[in-house]
Amino acid sequence: MDFSKVKLVVTDMDGTLLNSKGEVSKRFFNIYNELKKTPNTFCCRKWTSIPKYNNKFDAIKNEITIIAENGGIVKQGNQELLLSNLTSEIL
Figure 1 (cartoon, one colour):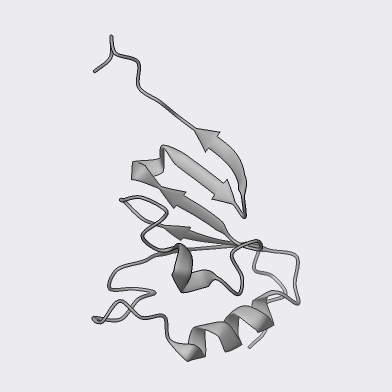
Figure 2 (cartoon, helix red, strand yellow):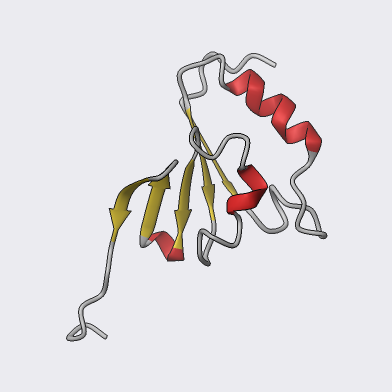
């Protein structure tokens, strides 16, 4: 596949990147390795918390961006890029 024009890949987790058993396809890592050859960003988006999925991507966790908690948390590896807390007044 030619990924030379791809700049950003964002995928949902459940039912998209993960199968019905909650597993990441081995085929994904082959495709991801091809994506790594180009200057792009790979993001996984999940409505719930990050820890639930950390072990799914141990091999590449420092290379990808995870968007979780309805967009309230964005992490790349161990670095928090965004943490959006609601104040008690808003709640």
